[in-house]
Image (tube, rainbow, N blue to C red; front, side, top):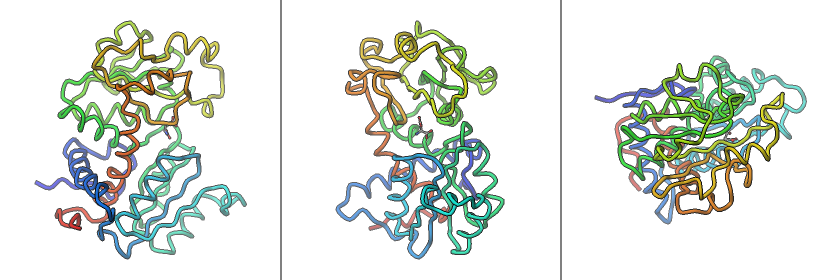
Length: 310
Ligand code: ASP
């Protein structure tokens, strides 16, 4: 059997477990390429990838760019600052303009939920959602799943707590879907004002207390996403930190700690937790390139498994 993914990756809902596993298996072979002196394979030679970033990004934009280059694609990276978007050009016009270069894929990050889906209707290219407002960030969830699978093996029955600002987090939504598809049990935890009401409909548990945190195998911490908050959701960041900050003392031996970055040191995470051996944060970043290579490869080349040869 050969499960296919695509034509786009807008949401984790586009993938069943077999599709996720296929991407993760492919990412394993690309992780091996990262260990070589020449970190390049010819899989996308002669094809063009456009990265379109309308919102701040360090890890996602750099790893998509590196992923496309390591697959030998030609890459055009556009950020809203300094582009014609600054001059008022609409997303639709920008996408149609860039489609004139006949890109194989457009990677889009936008502050607006649903933007990637719209882009998919305006271009013949494969569209990859690199984060659309509060909606989804599927490649983050895939790289997190990859990182955990590497560390723990199969995730069936693994208990994962996602702690913090769930309400504004596209990472939480994509991870709840992806980790559950891989057999994990997910609990979200945070102040009631930062837990969406309907979240349990996604199949996870919800709590506002860290009392049972010791039950978790993995503690996945979210950033307070102040840029998306229109109201005051917590009395103060100091109080938030007192109740919900994950510190080395709050972690029990053997628990793993994850965070998608960027980290607000001293708010959702203490310095001693970030620097503790429990933290997989560096491994998450590293996984970003291999997993995004795998997503580009699966969308644009697909089977058979042949292009990974040196
Ligand atoms: N980098 C992640 C995102 O773009 C998480 C965050 O910003 O807190 O959603």
